[in-house]
Length: 375
Image (cartoon, rainbow, N blue to C red; front, top):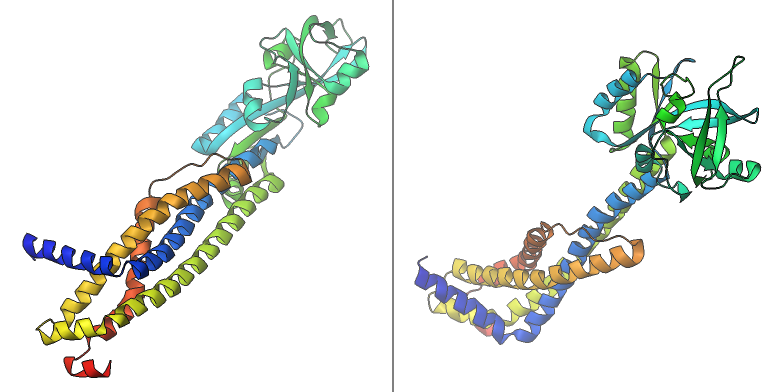
């Protein structure tokens, strides 16, 4: 088909659609509704579960590494675990537990890197500032109430030993609220705890791993097998909630999308079938003048492609807006638009339009001029 023939073909099918504008608008509206629903739900299915999973991780890590015996995990062992986890690690924090004395009373102390904790326990609430050096501490809410510790106050802590232990005056930089055992503890940096002659090591290492439950289980097994004296465990409450919510929501959305596609095909087919049937005499006359069945079929399929692209373009624009409204108002999540939804929606819209046209087009293209009087 040369350029002149292509121009004539496009002119013919556009004029044909224009002459039947009322029915074309009904068919376009049906396609647009289907395209809007598909594109909107597709964006929500991609964006919302992913961000909800990230939000769930703010409630705790999904894998922990513990020592198998009484000895703490050495920093070298933690580095080996970090290498196994690789780029799946979204956050990691190690904790060393010890006891120090305040006025001859034992207080539990947790040494950790506060920047690391923020990645796996962002729910920690701090009045004041995080410790920025070895001479600053966070005081758990319960400890602060019991001993009347205040922000800015110096607290004298002593190494618990039968001999004269190391004593330090440490400044309270903030009051910590977690709703957990840390409220009964003092939190400091590893360098701060090292001042009391406590050897470096970890009693607990928390990881936030990017992956489903199966992936995290596999990683935990590899860590336990390849590192003697170390045991990795999956926090099933967190990991299963992450996977379950994401999978349930995506499955539900795709089921609804499939139903929408079927309903759209039925609606479009009914409208296009009426349009094609109305034109039976026109096509019979064209065949009497020499048009072939393939010519009739090509004309109808060309019209359906234009119809699908037109309705799909309107639908995808509306769908992006719908997805943005759902994400912000229902889930308080900013929509992450993936522009692949545009060509995919246009392709599906065109396929729906073709599917709705194919059967009546095939029937009408076989019409014989001698049967015109019977129509």
